[in-house]
Length: 250
Image (tube, rainbow, N blue to C red):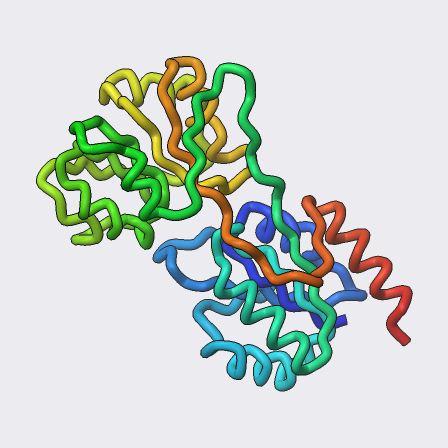
């Protein structure tokens, strides 16, 4: 069975590792290419976009893809919509593999907002020391609040993505650890953390560290995903889905 995995997450990488070497499956991993030095994967991998719904539908036909697993980031709303529409067009079965969202725990002080623009407003007018962990492509709205001091952590260099007077950029890649996160926030005298509700264990330590330090967190909610797509929350769930699908395939 020919399978396309839309990747870019820890779950996609873990699924690729679990499928590597299987003689009954022919998996292909697709990466958006936003990271210049992606980790090598144990299955064939393509890098780059498809060219919208039409391009993805054409790719599915040309490559004779029989199933697609959307294991993109929970905030990759456009790619998920394109996958749903393209799979519907060419009648390819689609599964969404999306890890559960974080939920507030006792001691958390979350300010939940629906968008990056709302996150900027939630920071208020008074200057604050902001730990910004929303990804390089989401930095632009914060230029409207140049009074704050920003500590920005991204995988790739931020370049001129956040043109404000006071910004310190850190390049680092998950997984992170709570002790180190707590030390970083204390050293930089962080007043507030801004992050997306990505879910997962790799970046959760900043949430635990903020809780321990009594630092509020501006939490940006996930965008809506396409309706009517079967969804699982784990790699094991995706493997079970593939097993059921193989049983239905003539």
